[in-house]
Image 1 (spheres, rainbow, N blue to C red):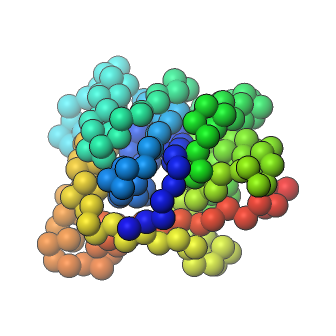
Image 2 (tube, rainbow, N blue to C red; image 1 turned 30 degrees about the vertical axis):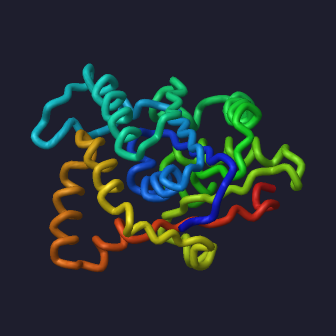
Length: 226
Protein backbone atom coordinates (compact mmCIF):
# COMPACT_ATOMS: atom_id res chain seq x y z
CA UNK A 1 0.00 0.00 0.00
CA UNK A 2 1.16 3.51 -0.78
CA UNK A 3 0.21 6.54 1.28
CA UNK A 4 -3.42 7.60 0.91
CA UNK A 5 -4.11 10.89 -0.83
CA UNK A 6 -7.18 13.08 -1.29
CA UNK A 7 -6.58 13.56 -5.03
CA UNK A 8 -3.48 13.05 -7.19
CA UNK A 9 -2.71 15.32 -10.15
CA UNK A 10 -0.14 14.00 -12.64
CA UNK A 11 1.33 16.48 -15.13
CA UNK A 12 3.63 15.42 -17.96
CA UNK A 13 4.26 16.82 -21.45
CA UNK A 14 4.11 13.67 -23.60
CA UNK A 15 2.03 10.52 -24.01
CA UNK A 16 4.17 7.68 -22.58
CA UNK A 17 5.94 9.90 -20.00
CA UNK A 18 3.54 8.43 -17.47
CA UNK A 19 4.05 4.86 -18.67
CA UNK A 20 7.76 4.62 -17.99
CA UNK A 21 8.02 6.37 -14.65
CA UNK A 22 4.72 6.45 -12.80
CA UNK A 23 2.08 4.14 -14.30
CA UNK A 24 2.48 1.62 -11.50
CA UNK A 25 2.02 4.39 -8.95
CA UNK A 26 -1.02 5.77 -10.78
CA UNK A 27 -2.58 2.31 -10.94
CA UNK A 28 -1.86 1.71 -7.26
CA UNK A 29 -3.60 4.93 -6.25
CA UNK A 30 -6.60 4.11 -8.41
CA UNK A 31 -6.88 0.59 -6.99
CA UNK A 32 -6.88 2.15 -3.50
CA UNK A 33 -9.79 4.38 -4.49
CA UNK A 34 -7.82 7.62 -4.80
CA UNK A 35 -9.00 9.95 -7.60
CA UNK A 36 -6.24 10.58 -10.15
CA UNK A 37 -6.17 13.18 -12.92
CA UNK A 38 -3.57 13.00 -15.67
CA UNK A 39 -2.94 16.24 -17.57
CA UNK A 40 -0.91 15.46 -20.69
CA UNK A 41 0.26 18.72 -22.20
CA UNK A 42 0.90 17.56 -25.80
CA UNK A 43 0.15 14.60 -28.05
CA UNK A 44 3.83 13.89 -28.67
CA UNK A 45 3.18 14.48 -32.35
CA UNK A 46 6.85 15.12 -33.08
CA UNK A 47 7.95 11.76 -31.71
CA UNK A 48 10.73 10.13 -33.73
CA UNK A 49 9.28 6.62 -33.74
CA UNK A 50 6.58 5.54 -36.18
CA UNK A 51 6.15 1.97 -34.97
CA UNK A 52 8.23 -1.19 -35.40
CA UNK A 53 7.53 -2.20 -38.09
CA UNK A 54 6.40 1.23 -39.26
CA UNK A 55 2.62 1.73 -39.23
CA UNK A 56 2.31 5.51 -38.70
CA UNK A 57 3.31 8.49 -40.82
CA UNK A 58 4.28 12.00 -39.80
CA UNK A 59 0.74 13.06 -40.73
CA UNK A 60 -1.08 10.26 -38.87
CA UNK A 61 1.11 10.22 -35.76
CA UNK A 62 -0.92 12.77 -33.73
CA UNK A 63 -4.09 10.69 -34.10
CA UNK A 64 -2.15 7.49 -33.38
CA UNK A 65 -0.65 8.88 -30.19
CA UNK A 66 -3.98 10.28 -29.03
CA UNK A 67 -5.54 6.83 -29.43
CA UNK A 68 -2.58 5.24 -27.63
CA UNK A 69 -2.87 7.71 -24.74
CA UNK A 70 -6.53 6.83 -24.26
CA UNK A 71 -5.64 3.13 -24.32
CA UNK A 72 -2.91 3.74 -21.73
CA UNK A 73 -5.43 5.49 -19.48
CA UNK A 74 -7.70 2.45 -19.76
CA UNK A 75 -4.80 0.16 -18.84
CA UNK A 76 -4.22 2.15 -15.65
CA UNK A 77 -7.92 2.39 -14.82
CA UNK A 78 -7.68 6.17 -15.20
CA UNK A 79 -10.94 7.99 -15.93
CA UNK A 80 -9.89 11.64 -15.76
CA UNK A 81 -7.51 12.20 -18.68
CA UNK A 82 -6.94 15.79 -19.75
CA UNK A 83 -5.34 16.51 -23.15
CA UNK A 84 -4.19 20.07 -22.82
CA UNK A 85 -3.55 20.77 -26.51
CA UNK A 86 -0.06 22.28 -26.50
CA UNK A 87 2.42 21.50 -29.28
CA UNK A 88 5.12 18.89 -28.86
CA UNK A 89 8.74 20.09 -28.69
CA UNK A 90 7.71 23.74 -28.26
CA UNK A 91 7.00 23.97 -24.53
CA UNK A 92 10.34 25.59 -23.80
CA UNK A 93 9.19 28.50 -25.99
CA UNK A 94 5.79 28.94 -24.32
CA UNK A 95 5.31 31.94 -22.06
CA UNK A 96 6.28 30.97 -18.52
CA UNK A 97 3.37 32.90 -17.04
CA UNK A 98 0.86 31.12 -19.27
CA UNK A 99 2.38 27.73 -18.47
CA UNK A 100 2.24 28.53 -14.76
CA UNK A 101 -1.39 29.60 -15.06
CA UNK A 102 -2.31 26.39 -16.89
CA UNK A 103 -1.04 24.39 -13.92
CA UNK A 104 -2.56 26.78 -11.39
CA UNK A 105 -6.01 26.40 -12.96
CA UNK A 106 -5.80 22.60 -12.67
CA UNK A 107 -4.73 22.85 -9.04
CA UNK A 108 -7.50 25.35 -8.25
CA UNK A 109 -10.10 23.06 -9.82
CA UNK A 110 -8.95 19.72 -8.43
CA UNK A 111 -7.45 20.66 -5.05
CA UNK A 112 -4.96 17.78 -5.15
CA UNK A 113 -3.08 16.70 -2.05
CA UNK A 114 -0.26 15.43 -4.29
CA UNK A 115 1.15 16.54 -7.64
CA UNK A 116 3.45 14.27 -9.65
CA UNK A 117 5.67 15.71 -12.38
CA UNK A 118 9.34 16.12 -13.30
CA UNK A 119 12.08 17.61 -11.10
CA UNK A 120 13.44 20.83 -12.66
CA UNK A 121 17.05 20.59 -13.72
CA UNK A 122 17.04 16.79 -13.77
CA UNK A 123 14.45 15.94 -16.43
CA UNK A 124 16.73 15.97 -19.52
CA UNK A 125 14.24 16.97 -22.29
CA UNK A 126 13.37 20.68 -22.87
CA UNK A 127 9.63 19.89 -22.75
CA UNK A 128 10.15 18.03 -19.47
CA UNK A 129 12.03 20.97 -18.02
CA UNK A 130 9.40 23.49 -19.14
CA UNK A 131 6.71 21.36 -17.50
CA UNK A 132 8.67 21.02 -14.29
CA UNK A 133 9.27 24.77 -14.18
CA UNK A 134 5.56 25.50 -14.67
CA UNK A 135 4.57 23.09 -11.89
CA UNK A 136 7.09 24.53 -9.44
CA UNK A 137 6.15 28.11 -10.30
CA UNK A 138 2.44 27.41 -9.82
CA UNK A 139 2.77 25.47 -6.58
CA UNK A 140 5.34 27.95 -5.26
CA UNK A 141 2.66 30.67 -5.18
CA UNK A 142 0.49 28.63 -2.81
CA UNK A 143 0.83 29.17 0.93
CA UNK A 144 3.04 26.40 2.37
CA UNK A 145 0.33 25.04 4.67
CA UNK A 146 -2.08 24.76 1.71
CA UNK A 147 0.40 23.61 -0.90
CA UNK A 148 0.08 20.05 -2.24
CA UNK A 149 3.11 17.81 -2.01
CA UNK A 150 5.23 17.50 -5.14
CA UNK A 151 6.73 14.12 -5.95
CA UNK A 152 9.13 14.58 -8.82
CA UNK A 153 10.70 12.19 -11.31
CA UNK A 154 14.40 12.83 -11.99
CA UNK A 155 16.63 10.81 -14.26
CA UNK A 156 19.54 12.98 -15.43
CA UNK A 157 22.92 11.28 -15.15
CA UNK A 158 23.93 13.47 -12.20
CA UNK A 159 20.67 13.05 -10.27
CA UNK A 160 21.85 10.88 -7.37
CA UNK A 161 25.18 12.67 -7.23
CA UNK A 162 23.43 15.99 -6.59
CA UNK A 163 20.03 15.07 -5.11
CA UNK A 164 21.04 11.89 -3.31
CA UNK A 165 18.97 8.73 -3.22
CA UNK A 166 15.25 9.03 -4.05
CA UNK A 167 13.07 10.07 -1.12
CA UNK A 168 10.20 7.76 -2.09
CA UNK A 169 10.30 4.28 -3.59
CA UNK A 170 7.00 2.60 -4.42
CA UNK A 171 6.95 -1.17 -4.68
CA UNK A 172 4.76 -1.76 -7.73
CA UNK A 173 5.25 -5.48 -8.25
CA UNK A 174 1.57 -6.10 -7.55
CA UNK A 175 0.66 -3.99 -10.60
CA UNK A 176 3.54 -5.06 -12.82
CA UNK A 177 1.25 -6.29 -15.60
CA UNK A 178 -0.76 -3.05 -15.47
CA UNK A 179 2.45 -1.11 -15.99
CA UNK A 180 3.51 -3.32 -18.88
CA UNK A 181 0.06 -2.92 -20.44
CA UNK A 182 0.38 0.86 -20.15
CA UNK A 183 3.70 0.72 -21.94
CA UNK A 184 2.22 -1.63 -24.56
CA UNK A 185 -0.53 0.91 -25.21
CA UNK A 186 2.10 3.36 -26.50
CA UNK A 187 3.32 0.79 -29.01
CA UNK A 188 4.31 3.31 -31.70
CA UNK A 189 7.04 4.52 -29.34
CA UNK A 190 7.80 1.57 -27.08
CA UNK A 191 8.00 -1.54 -29.27
CA UNK A 192 11.78 -1.97 -29.20
CA UNK A 193 12.10 -1.16 -25.51
CA UNK A 194 9.27 -3.55 -24.63
CA UNK A 195 10.95 -6.32 -26.57
CA UNK A 196 14.16 -5.87 -24.57
CA UNK A 197 12.31 -5.32 -21.29
CA UNK A 198 10.16 -8.43 -21.55
CA UNK A 199 13.20 -10.52 -22.51
CA UNK A 200 15.03 -9.13 -19.48
CA UNK A 201 12.12 -9.90 -17.16
CA UNK A 202 12.09 -13.51 -18.34
CA UNK A 203 15.82 -13.73 -17.57
CA UNK A 204 15.41 -11.99 -14.17
CA UNK A 205 17.80 -9.29 -15.32
CA UNK A 206 18.12 -6.67 -12.52
CA UNK A 207 18.13 -3.76 -14.98
CA UNK A 208 14.85 -4.91 -16.50
CA UNK A 209 13.22 -5.77 -13.19
CA UNK A 210 13.90 -2.33 -11.72
CA UNK A 211 11.56 -0.85 -14.35
CA UNK A 212 8.61 -2.97 -13.28
CA UNK A 213 9.30 -3.53 -9.58
CA UNK A 214 9.79 -0.01 -8.23
CA UNK A 215 9.10 3.64 -9.08
CA UNK A 216 11.21 6.36 -7.51
CA UNK A 217 10.48 9.97 -6.67
CA UNK A 218 12.11 12.99 -5.06
CA UNK A 219 10.16 15.22 -2.73
CA UNK A 220 10.63 18.70 -4.10
CA UNK A 221 12.55 20.91 -1.66
CA UNK A 222 10.89 24.31 -1.71
CA UNK A 223 13.44 27.08 -2.03
CA UNK A 224 15.32 25.29 -4.81
CA UNK A 225 13.29 27.28 -7.32
CA UNK A 226 15.10 30.48 -6.39
